[in-house]
Length: 123
Image 1 (cartoon, rainbow, N blue to C red):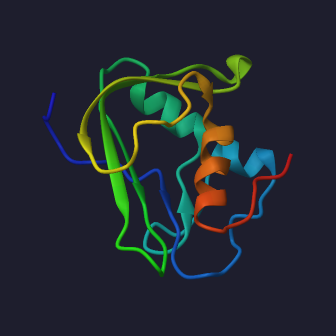
Image 2: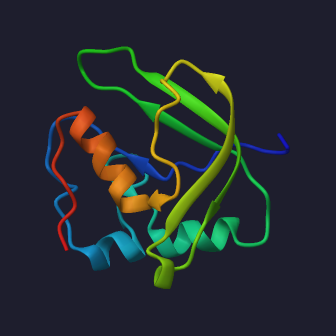
């Protein structure tokens, strides 16, 4: 399944609070691709709608070198299903395999935010 590069869904640079956004912002995306940015749930869904892809989570902050995990394939439900993320079979990585499966992507993202001491997404 490794036919190309990765698409960066989110990038957080520094300690600025540019992720304190509304739900609408998280739907459509925001930011600068070279700085703080979020691709947007609708854009993510369109990317994976008709193609099987892997998903990789990279977690790092100023105090750690970071961790990552790759799942062999994943599925992102529609907006009416709260963009529920389902992933299958960890294939590589040093991040513990205890991420919550079948959870809304924003709830999962908030878990990462908590790990890195960032702010939560607000509705």
